[in-house]
Length: 578
Ligand SMILES: [Zn+2]
Image (cartoon, rainbow, N blue to C red; front, side, top):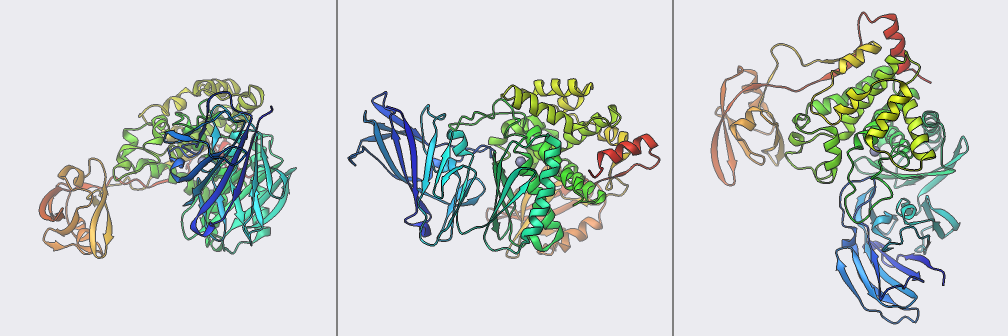
């Protein structure tokens, strides 16, 4: 008997945030039982999310509708005891977490993150899957990157594809536009005032620019699902779709609109970088546990570098805007003391327990592989440009790596293999930068920027820097609470604690306007002692701090005065419009 797996989705209680799932599995009974499993994480978002927690009312039946016994054997596996060749599994999934990697259902629409909705049969991830969807009354559209059989039925060649194709179901506003042979579709969810034509034109420019970098667009069809929210930005990449969250008001302001276009450019870039050109450990995925890699500084960092650069190449950013965006990466990294104790590669490896699980001490112990990776990417891009006299750049390395590792070998890469290929393709020793991803020693970034006629300057690097306690605060009602503190700052050394309520400094009452602290800092000298009274766990304490200079950085990137004609020429190539 040939085997088949089909899912039927229906929504009997969307207002209560449920999707009802019927899975039919035929022809799989080689043992006395069948194990069905729910993934624990979503590729692209490196955190164990325990999607099985939302599964309830699980039942198994034979084709006669008779119940079959089952048992949960671990947190995400149900063992169904039967030898019948036709197993029906019913369950409901509760979906009330608004994000790009979790499902959310209400009376208006359903966003389904497939890793949290569809069970797979153990050892059958390669199997094809068919999905049909019953629309609730009043819902008219289904948007997904899966192959469409008819209005309500879709086919995935395997579970990797199914898990890579989210569903937006409801009454989203959709429209299509072609870009150089790839059909693109926007599916806009929730109220927002965007200009369809402008958006299609702007996305077209981004797609063309990225096609140029990679040389080939592998998709016939690509779907942008955009959720409009009251705040917050984010995206998740897929092979032929992406899910974006942006403020519903973002289109009204040029800066926030460009930030949205930056998100579009970022997630679209991922259709190559990470979804196809990827480290060996990132596919095929193990959906049961963490999949570790040190290479997210390349996958996310390079993508973060190019999202802004593509906006510059499309002329959405002028040179000054672009350089300001690039400087944010440097400021973000160097204003977090964690850069002194965590490498970019370690940040990648530990994303499961650090990047995605921040706490009050995170900025002291870790860096973001997005920002640090973008810094390393610009160093690579410029070094290649300078040493090849403008003949080659990072674009060329990425295109060749995509061809070699994905199109030809059909496999992932080890970091060393990527470095070897980059060095072979450019004829340049790039070990300084690849090693820097694994070391705490910082590159001298100006040695790279200078080569193309630019410089990185810390505008706070001057005499008489302001004094600082080294804390950030939150205000609850009128109470000023310590939110976090920087490693080795005055507050850190004196023993102020997170959640201390700040009451007085040198006898002045601390109000929520911050004036007392500002006054004391502005009238003191380095090394002066100040007394702070705090309330901690219901008791008052007096803490003496020895004041230090602020070590806050404020980097700017600009043209180098007295740059040679050669440097200027290379700089023009670096930031040229294409
Ligand atoms: Zn990304």
